View 1 (cartoon, helix red, strand yellow):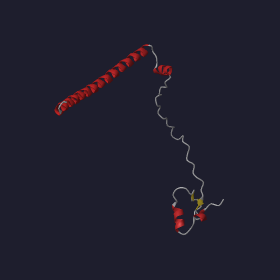
View 2 (cartoon, rainbow, N blue to C red):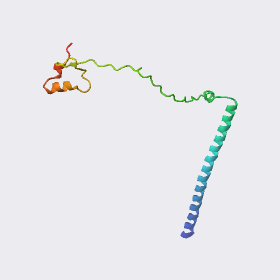
View 3 (tube, rainbow, N blue to C red):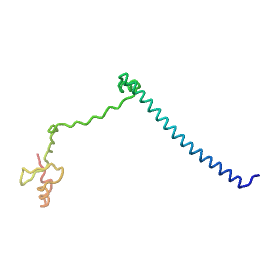
View 4 (cartoon, rainbow, N blue to C red):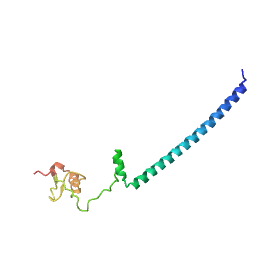
Length: 131
C-alpha cells in the first residue's frame, strides 16, 4: 500500500491537470464562439452581396421564407389646430335665487355663490332647477 504523502501528491497533480484542462476548455469555447460568429458574418455578407447583385428586396426574401418583416413605425400625425370638437358644457342643475344668471351643473368644485348660500344655512335642494 502507498503512503499518505504519495496519495496527496497524486491528488495534487490530478487537481493541477483538471485546472489546466478547465482553462483550456474555456479558451477553446471562446475561440469556437469567435470562429462561429466570424463565419456567420462572412456568410451573411456573402448572401447580402448576392441579393444586391440580383436586385432583390429584403421584403421579397422574407415573403419567400414566410417571415413577416416589421414595418417602420410611423409617427403619429396630429390633427390641425381647431379641428377638435369643442367641450360641451353640462346642463345646469342649480340656479342662484339671488342672481338667476348664476348656474352650476353640480359637477366639480362648488362655485363661490353656492358655498356662500350653504354657509348662510341654505340647502342644495332649495337651489335645484325645477323644470
